[in-house]
Length: 244
Image (cartoon, rainbow, N blue to C red):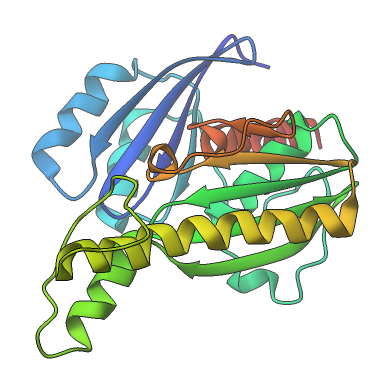
């Protein structure tokens, strides 16, 4: 294992760059991927010929730029060796973010089973049972729900409310916020309770994603928040790739 490894989790709009030193995540920076002028910042962060791990759904142009920074690069993809059995029926359609979250919780869990809850553009639950990835669920996140309300009605506005809303809206905007925010809150807690009923106490939840801070999770010892879950999963896949 290299002393310093730069792990890049690159999306369509931004890339998270995590610096791992001797297996520990030391720092995280976010840079835009859809603005070529910001790529020079990446050049300043990553030293010449550093060890780089890339997991990317960004443009081919961006990926080529990363390859130009170093010859010591490992690309993580859907066919990369995993540290567990993947029993998903359509593995070729499984998003790398979901897979990386599952790998991360597999390496971190102290119970037999674990669930990653990723609150971003979509709300994703992903289950690891013992030494296998079993699957999960996908539903629309906050922005997608607001956009649907606006796009499929004649008069509802497009809003961007994130704060915890009252269950009783006193205006059209607050009613939309109540429906979306409180609805998501009920969905999350409802699904968590169903997982608890299925797996009992041998279960841990890991919460991540850009919208995670907008929801209050019950103060239980089976819930852990980790904003860098996906990065840690990419790194764990890299370690498995190197070892195999």
